Image (tube, rainbow, N blue to C red; front, side, top):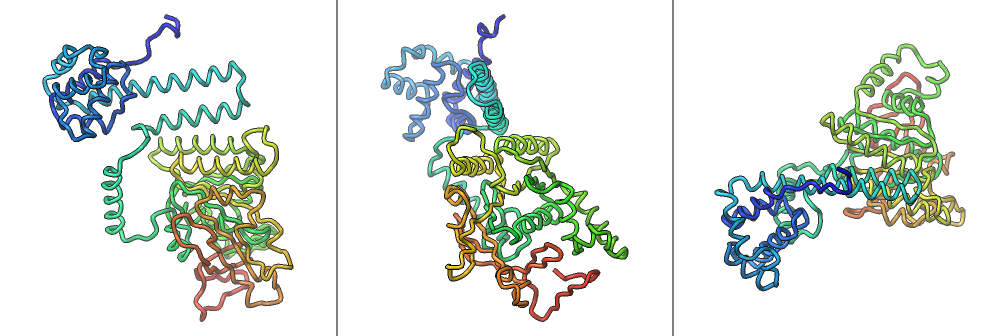
Length: 464
């Protein structure tokens, strides 16, 4: 039979059984409405009957043969659904409401397959009509398919009553847990306490002027998350190659000077430290994509693919890091200028965080105003974010790296000092986080106690 003549997937018997169960047992309505919405029913009459039941329930009225009949009369729909005779037929469809959830899942699954057909058909039509660039068509189709794969119930308005119960449970769980860090830990104690870690659904922007250490800090965070916290981490590096990134992470963790390793002058007795870190990192769930000039579409597609592959292994992608935002190409070639393109990129990164339910950390450059000599100091500000104010708007957290010693190199007391400025946090406080910067190891750490000396000679280990 040609595709255009085929009936969409449906579960009419299950639809009748669900409605019949709700007519004979009040509790069945509660169980069914956790799974179904009116649009899940294929038959129009069933949608109208279910909607009538929901209306009665919303008014705290009983749901039975008499009340549903009267509600359909009131709305002028009784004749359309087959009159009282059809409602009686629904009741006779089942002898018990014990299996209502099973029937409801059959109805929901059929509706899901119909939606899959609609998504596929729409994609095919767009392809035939040449609507959009191939990369955008692929991204749109994959985004819709991924959303379907994650969907168990339709999203929409949620009543205050339902939210009150859910939030109460969340707060009680938080009180029992007693752990202030609910997201991905960065390893920076004060930052984690202020932010609760890198939280799911959040877009975190880590920004700095060149040579301030934003890549180093991102890699330090990636190492801590992947190795110490055992959280799967994805890194998109649009600037550095994967071997360079891996080597930097190993050297930072082993507290080995990168330039000595690269020059072959690294002491042999320290090799075991490097070998140990290579083994630890090799066992971590760390994934690096160093494809240059990626588009935001490429990043979204590859992130979703990795998340799906990890899910098959029983794992959940925990953190996405992108180095860095200004090197990402936009999804569309029709944007008038780079500012619009960056606005589109930041918006789509935020959507990626929400769709995958994962924190996305995007590195960003600051403009040259941060080094303007007419300013009172060199501390970066939100307004220094380069190219687009939408980055500030879309980001849930904006953290700015500042190293005063970079500007005052003659002051030896400043060379190890660094500040991570939380310039914006949508759901928490802002403020400064003091850190230690060890340039020879490209390593940020928590501040050292004042009575501890920091060794600088190769071969000595800095306590962290």
